[in-house]
Amino acid sequence: MSYQRKRFDALLSELSSMRHFVLDVLETHNPVIADDAKDDIIFATNEIATNIIEHGYKGLSGEALEIDVDVSDETVTIRLRDDAPSFDPTNPETPDINAPLESRPLGKVGLFLTVEYMDAVRHRKLGDKGNEITLIKELRG
Amino acid sequence: MDISVHESDENPGISILKLTGELDGSNFQQVVDAAKNAKADGATHILLDMSDVPFMGSAGLVALHTVALIMQEKPLPSEDDGWSALSKMANDIDAGMQPFVKILSPQSSVERGLKKTGMNQFIEVFSDKKSALAAFGE
Image 1 (spheres, one colour):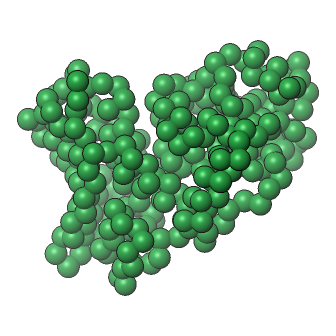
Image 2 (cartoon, each protein chain N blue to C red):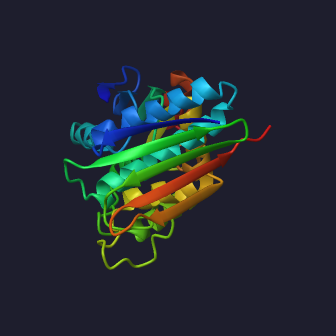
């Protein structure tokens, strides 16, 4: 298994860099990953990162998010970590008294598709503040 | 993202918007604004050339849906609509193909997203420009 971690400024303008980081790790450590699987992983990473930036941090500047990429022959695991107030995007209907109501349609479409594209999407609260979202894609065939 | 706009020589009234670059939450509004401007300039139909768009996130899907609503002169979802806006998109997709906006040559990853969401049942997709332009007349 290969593992890489990178920290990014939590800005929409950094989404492209985040996607390319994930793609580079995938292609370096498992060059035979099917294009469909790569597309799904990059899409889901993009959506969760967007959600963190726009809703977790409410678009505020000066924040960061961290992306871990674990690649094996069987599985790709992406973990995105932030320091935002706790919000579980895997269950957007669950009220969270510490976060504003999820209101933008943008985030909802992305979250819906993320769950469709990945084999598992999990949320974990990190202490008093912060979230870790884990995306898992099983590589088949 | 770069967006170039020109009117079809063969079909006045059809604006061709060529998008170049990745389409995500940072720039999807540019596509919507370009469509609004094209309509304000007299366009009755829009062909979105996506041949040079290697990635499209969900923001891009929202942009495509919004462009179609603009050209249909239907109300646009507001930011407060939340999950109902997603339902509205799904309802519009279920209602079938609209005639005002078409997509040209999406790359494979983008086309997968269009198919996965059913957006290709709402906005027709073509692999060649001539066929796309001709289809507007049908």
